Image 1 (cartoon, rainbow, N blue to C red):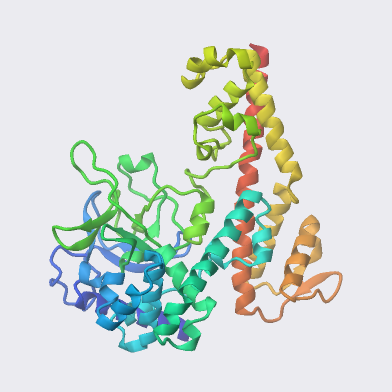
Image 2: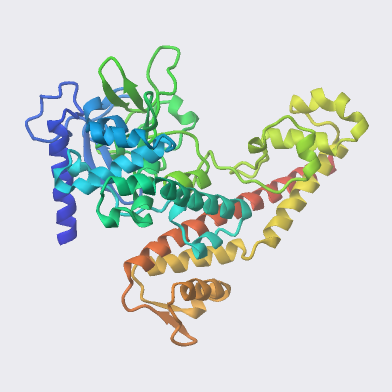
Amino acid sequence: MAGEKQTVDGIEALLSWAAQIGISDSSSPNSSSSGSCLGHSLFVSDFPDAGGRGLGAARELRRGEIVLRVPKAALFTTESVILDPEIASLMERHKHLSPIQRLIVCLLMEVNKGRSSKWYPYLSQLPRDYTTLSNFTVPEIKAFQVEDAIWAAEKAAEKTKSDWRGSLALLNELDLKPQLLNFRSWLWASQTVSSRTLHISWDEAGCLCPVGDLFNYDAPDELVLHEHDEVGVASKSCSLNCSVEAVNASNERLTDGGYEESSSSYCFYARRRYKQGGQVLLSYGTYTNLELLEHYGFLLPQNPNDKAFIKLEPDLYKITSYDIESLYIQPDGIPSFALLCALRLWSAPVSCRKNYMHLVLSGSQVSVQIELQVLNWLAKRCYETLQDLPTTIKVDKIVVNGIDALQRGKARIDFRDLGPALEEFKKFFEELNLKFENSESFVIDVMPIRIRKSLERWRLAVEWRLAYKSVLFKCFCYCKEQIDELSLS
């Protein structure tokens, strides 16, 4: 209860501070007498089934209506932090650093100031850790099982370490507290920047936006073009990287927000209609689940923008002009248009490919024989990929249920409930130096924080590979259905 009270007190202090520096959810910033920047359009609440802490609608909101305005002076940018000429001169001597590295350094500088920092009420409310790919340990990375995901996680971790090493000279010259010089502090600051920055035109690194980053995520799709009373799937993270995307024919704003020179503010808009009490969500781009994990530390159970990639024959890439990123399987198991076109052209006789090109690019079948060839190859590749992975969909579901039981506080796990998933549990906990006491069950009397955090990341990895396998299985079934239909025609 004490921790909850501290959180509530911290949020109230943040909203009060935000009001003082001009952040407001009202068109008349000075109209509120509550001492909070919210209350007219938005309120902070907990949405346990849809992203955790987020922002709800304080009243019915119209689509395209402005719901929050954050003045430029309140944005945390490299420019707003480096006001001291000596610090500016010091930064100038390290021109090799990227804009993102500079912003991370600025964040650590402000943390170093403690309560004397202008942004202390905001900084004190930032998450203490993240579940982005850079935070995954070696055992957690292995849990992805799929080569592409493992490579992405390893690359993210190495990039973060490389950026830290490259910034150490500057960090030392800034005379920061010793604990802020270590990699753990850099990891926290870099993932804060990765998961919470918004786009601004004058700095490639973007900016941190107090209060504005309390919005949870809604994946962009065609539903934005229609009126809705209820909102859809939300994220497990409150992170933003918004930009103004489009306006419809009648000039009605459909997207989330952006920095506006006319008001010198970052302005947020309702992307659809919201009922009072509903969670107000924002979209910050189309991302696959792996990309969401890499940059923001969460994934969506139903992500319309997810993609599953399979290994293709090397010579297939040579005959198609499509980008490799477009050769994927959709969440519903249907191959993308580009993948289907590439496979049709690749399956056709070499001497006929030029003549078939116009049919392929129009999305038409070349012939029943070639279509059957494509579907059989795709079904076989999906089946072989699933067979080559260490665990099945059924086992992955057992692993997820077992992790959920531990996260709910169940100290004892009966081995009989784990079945074929037992070996993964044993191996994972042995990597954490936790030993099985007997052959019938696993017991954790007190769950350390590090174990809880590791469980959270492990679950995300298993959840990702489960979704990947499910897409491949759907594709296998789709191909078999199409083969049966063509065989009867």
